[in-house]
Image 1: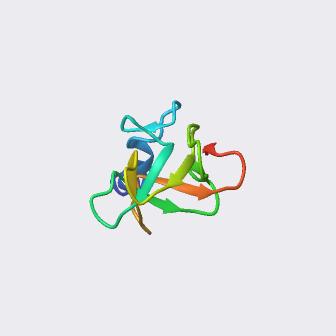
Image 2: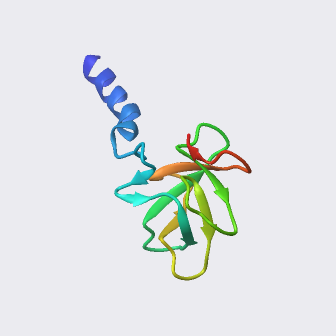
Image 3: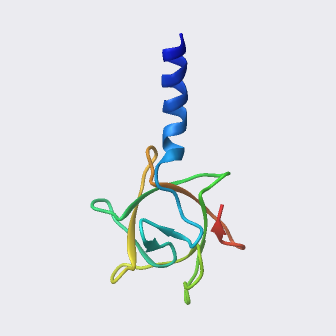
Length: 103
């Protein structure tokens, strides 16, 4: 019984133990603001869009994406690439109109 409880706790807590967005708004050393390109393969990050409790609140901007969570979507020359997924994301995002940043 204890073994099963340990396995259950590990499975539920495992996603929380892996790398998360750091306080300086980076993930694996890459700043999470700037020019972003959505791709289907070979993305820097897999992200999942959620309605509440995101890891990062993202504001889509047309210019000056220089603060945490401000993303300018582009078709070329991105700072990083993302792929939208429904499961097993690197981190979760929520699109907002105001107050982007860490969730």
